[in-house]
Every structure is written in C-alpha cells, then in structure tokens.
Length: 354
Image 1 (tube, one colour):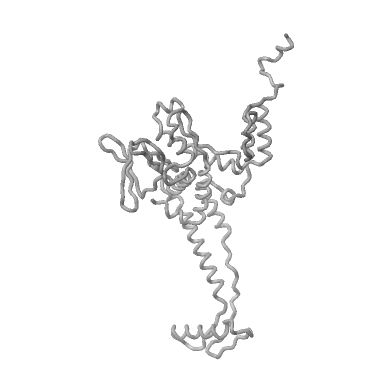
Image 2: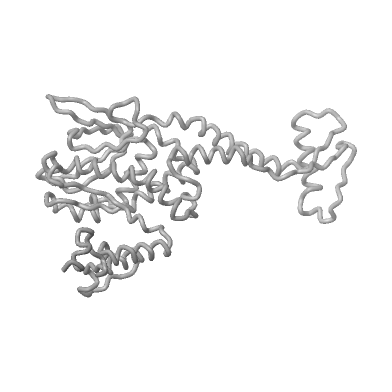
C-alpha cells in the first residue's frame, strides 16, 4: 500500500472522507430477472462484516487513497456468489497458471492468495502507465512537502512566540552549565507566579534585560490556500463540499464531476463480476444511483414536482419521497395523473373537422 502516507494528512483525509461518505449514499438497483437472490445483499449487507453503506465507504476510500481498489466475490460452499468484499492488499499482480489468469495479492502479514481474474472487480483512478492498475500518488508529493513545511512552521512558530519573553546578557563568561543555572534562577525569582508585585530584581551577574515583543504566529494564508487548492483539485472536491456549506448548484457540479463517475465504474465492475456477456446483453445489470435531488432547495423540489406530476411522470408518493415525507397507503397515491387539456400534435384540428 503506497498511498497510506497521504491518508495521515488531516486535510487530505478530510477530502477523502467527504468523497467516501457521499459514495456510501449510493443506492444499488438490480435490473433484470437473473440473480434476484442477490438483491437483499446488494441493498443491505454486501458481506458478513459490512452493510452496503460501509462497503461503499471502504471501497471508495481505498480507491481515492490508492487509485486502485479491488472487489472480490464472497461465495458459499458451492462456489455460488453471495456477496462482495473490498480488499486492501499491500501489493498485487496479475499472474497466469495453466492458461487461467489470476489476481494474486499479498497482505502486510505475509499472507497471499489468488482469485480468478474473471471473478475480480478492479476500480482505478489516474490510470495511465499500467493496463490494469491506477498510477501512484507521486504527483501529490510537492503538495505533501508544502503541508509538512507548513505544519512544522506552525508548531515552531507557536513555540517560539509563546516561550521567548526576555533577552538578558550575563556580565561574566560562563560555561553552559552555569549559564543554565543562572537562567533557571532568574526565571524562578522573577517570572514565576510568586512574583505578584511585578518587579524584576537581579544582581550584576545579569545585565541588559530587554523584553521581547512576542507577536502571535500567523499562518501563511497564501501558501495555505495553495495547499487546499492542490488537495481539492486532486480529489475532485472543494472547500465548501468538505465543510458542508454548498448550495445545490455546487453540489450538482461536485456530484457529476466526482461521485457519478465512481458510481458508473462500480456499476459496470460489479455487473461484469455478476453476469455473463449474454446476460448483460439481455438487460441484467447492477446500477448504483443517487437521489440527485437530495440537496436541491425546496423551491426547486416544489417546481419539479408540480411540473412532473401534471405530466404523469411522478405519482403522489414519488413526490412525497422527494420531500422526505412518508408514503400514503392509498391506491390513488401511486396513480399517474395528467392534465386533460393536453393533446397529441397529430390530433390537433380533428375535433373541429368532426
């Protein structure tokens, strides 16, 4: 795992966590009649250890940290697919044995295993120089160096501005041990809480005592903004998205640029793991979608519901779901309605002729 180091940086972890959290909200749908037995696993529990939300969070976190994420099948004792599991190996490679391709991967504990390539799902980001795996995060190294330099500067600046308050000169030449003793004695006699009078008195061993004008340490705002910009650009989010202060237009741009591509990739990868090409051609697939209206304003939701309900696109219960309201258990709430004054273009003028 070469990406673990970047996950230890606070700003980078916040960006990755934001992306993974929003990916975890994706909703799986099983289309077609084949493998309906997987529907419960897809919607609720992908494997014995993870709910669907936890699976998606873990999978997308690995993807954004490593630029490559693996999904392996969970099978019963008959070799039948029952779920999916995201794995984080320390290294992996594709190998061949007796004409069959395998993904072989190693863990930090030294354990290794192999899975038939046709059963494995591989998600990638920044895929360029390798046919299978995503690229490394070396492009982020200059930003990591800036982060380290900024953090070191903050720590040292705060320490220095808070601790150095006086500059004094000793009258005689002293070795390091005597100098340390003189400094300690001066501090205990004059700068401790016991000195309630606020007067400094000293003998002629220490002269020219000058107070230091300690100014609070200020972060380099321009450099910090550059760091944030680099990180957010790299991970496809923004400061408003990370801090949950976005509006609906900013959310839609973020969703289409960052979350939706991941949803499409997960859908295609898990569909390929589950179905044969013939089954896919017949319309069987796994699709991950998002409630794209979840961050729309109430004004936008109201306008959309009004327009689509009158034209038969939405039922009453579907409109209530957009507003996060409970269903109504009445037949009319699931009916489609349309305004009667509408007519087909080809029918215009027929009534007059008749």
